[in-house]
Amino acid sequence: MFAAGEAPLRSTALGGSIDVRWLGGGAAYGWPGVAARLGEQPLRAIRALAFPLRAAFSSRGFDRVVAHWIIPSAFPSAIFATPDLEIWAHGADVRALSRAPRFARAVISVLLRRGAHFVFVARSLRDALVEVLGRELGRMLAQRSRVEPAPIDVPDRATLSDPRGDREPRVSGRFVVWVGRFLDAKRPLLAAELARHAGVQIVFIGDGPLALPAGALALGKLSRDETLRFIAHASALVSTSVEEGCPTVVREAQALGTPVIAFAAGDLAERSRKDPKITIVEDERAFVAALRALGR
Image: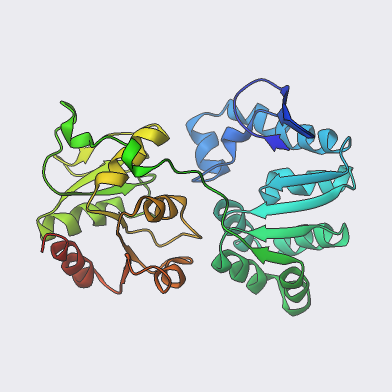
């Protein structure tokens, strides 16, 4: 197993036959993409270039490799080594490949020839990649893949204290929560506007380049435990994003029993058919109506 991040390269035994090797440099590859992250911190480029090489050469010592991200983890491993390779494909790497069809076809072709198997965290992500690959290569990818949301571990709701008892921030009464990066595709400004029209207090958790309206209650980027506290005690989690696969934060809200109000993106509509607490709305007027209904 390989882990990406800013920590130095090290090996950690977890017990049994599992060994985790921390490769470092992975901070350049997350949302909202390599270009944006390197723009924020150009020095990340050095570690970012080293990461694929470390992943590739480290994989040579294993019979089986489970790689998260097609690029940069799985592709270098397939070139420099020939392990039994399972690839977990997430939203960022699938969207990047889908925007470069020729490159996507070259990458997926190599991986399939090396016998790789794919796991997509959302059906919509697999469909998006299949669509740009062409009939034959797309058919091969579909046959060599499955859809399975990445596993999550959520604490019992009873262990998460109500943030409305805190002195700071001042959250009182009923509130909804929005979690994510402040980016155009996530549409936090729209969320603020919809909540204002509905007369509902909204709490923003996250960070990013977009500036929220004056007076918006933005808590910044919190720890996962702190974020789960707000999700657990909110009247609803709201999602205004148009680019999603199978959002982890929605699955966390489901596990905590918190209702979700969202536009149809990724696999959310499909999940709503199995969970009555997920409300999918078609337009902004319906979103406002759903928010107002929370107080009835």
